[in-house]
Image (tube, rainbow, N blue to C red; front, side, top):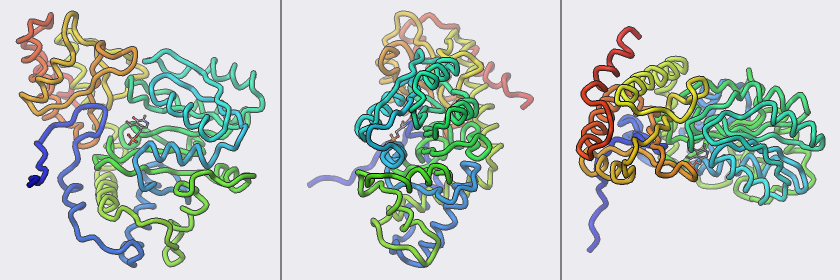
Length: 393
Ligand SMILES: Cc1ncc(COP(=O)(O)O)c(C=O)c1O
């Protein structure tokens, strides 16, 4: 007979999922009700309002897609891209590559603007591409590249795209709740995120938001959206105000309780305070790592506080370190991807994981394992450096 699955209790400091707050986990265990139950409908309406707060938008179409961040990405592309349309995709890491895939699969023509992994998107290159492709209709980019820990200037990119009459698709999976994402102020047209990072929630849902301009483009489509499930014309009927709600799919009721709770917690903390907490905890981790002699991949001005890509010390088998952290300390950190595999670790400080206990655990466990392996690091300084860095904050 198969036993129940009882997972170990880990500390999740990788690129996601990140630690889920116990309040959010317990919200998930509340009784399941019907997805057309008036109480559920009321909860969904509250959730829309709280998501508008998280995204800093008044966009009416601000909802959670019933699937993970990748589905939010796909929702944006299948609805906005029409067959034969040119889409400028800025790529500076793994997830820009996924955007290209999405454009191709929706019958669009991707025009790639490539930047080195670990560097922010170069506005001059983007403007050159916009000038060279006056028929482009969309600019798509990743605000916070989880594969490298770099943040691009979303406000400037959107402004540039609008100058050339393009709508924008923005990936905010890793940024939402961790660093400012100001949808209305920056004029973003379509944006998607994920629940498993800075919202301290379980994986599996994707908050999205669409501006009037994006909706107008979707409504003006000449062909049907190729995906039935993600067709916003249908989804809009489901998430429409209160009583008008029509059956589209059975909502993931309990995961939505979790998201609701996570957004209640975000309101309680305050968005600005959440951004400040991520910044502060990053400062502590950074001071500790640097005192050991471990450096960052990304320049300070475009570094994401919630995703720290740091160099593996010379001669160290990075996978062996991660394995020991997991086995001996129940601590998960992430590996590098693509060309960065074997060269960097990705240490996440996202949502509930962005707290001092985690920084101290990570620094002391890493120092202990690296010392044991004879790695060339400075010992005995990291924890004090972390405390010192945030002493007066
Ligand atoms: C920047 C970015 N975009 C998209 C995704 C895809 O999200 P999910 O894994 O929830 O489908 C991720 C996941 O890590 C991500 O980091």
